[in-house]
Length: 173
Image (cartoon, one colour):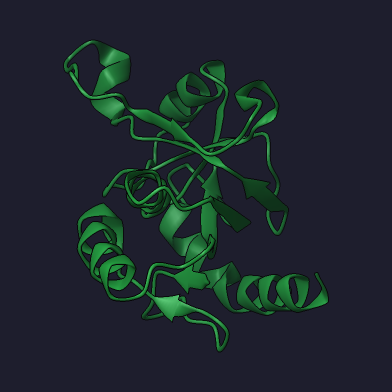
């Protein structure tokens, strides 16, 4: 089953499950209870912490939930903040999820130092729900922006082309 965030990120082949981790957790759980899919494939956009380029398309089976405050020692979490459906996590592009978009290049570099290269608001929740229901899952992302001061402006500027490229990629595969 193909799923996506929704609103400005809808695809004719995917079911929208919500924007941000909370909405995804609620709506995807309802969906899995109503009709447990054999496989979940999330499709969406992502910001790059610096290594991945605009319009790169990246597949992943691993997500993290790390907030920016982690890097200035102003917060901690008791939860397991990494989830994966991959057999070999060391080969994965880790996608970080937060309900906030990183706009600080210094913090972007801190994420890369932890081998985290992309940012997408929904993916961690997708993988947590999939893991709970024992559903294999993966995601594919297209980079629309870098996580810097221009993140929102560049996202808006590149979004339409990114959606077309990602749709073409999925339909070709």
